[in-house]
Image 1 (cartoon, rainbow, N blue to C red):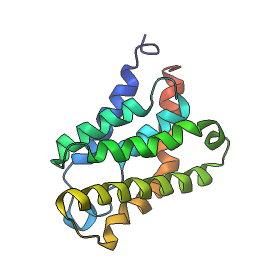
Image 2 (image 1 turned 135 degrees about the vertical axis):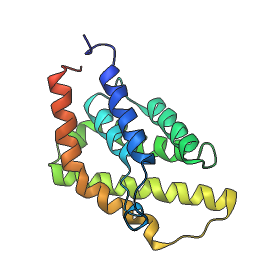
Image 3 (image 1 turned 180 degrees about the horizontal axis):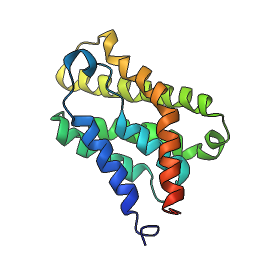
Length: 159
């Protein structure tokens, strides 16, 4: 029933959006993982024909709206990172889970640096080292998110 309409994929992306705006203690907020990026990376590797750069741009735009940032900043950064995943999904799928985690970390760092560069250009923000802390948590969480979403995909026979 759910396999062909993508409701489960949309539901996981909605949960990722909610996790991205959920309140956290200030001490832990600097380490908030890039939930939307992680979930998009999984779906783009698993089903590149259904979840792609347009989906990434829309999710980035929604993230811009939810975070109150300049419209298009997260959308552009998300589309750039996901483009690399979509173009290389067959190679990345063959890597071990830890190699995939490192690739995810590199792309998360690219995502944050693109967001910084665009914000620096538009609203003159200052770079701080803690700006890249989410990259660490994204690398650590990748294996668990990967296995969880793979289980969801297999249980609901999403193709």
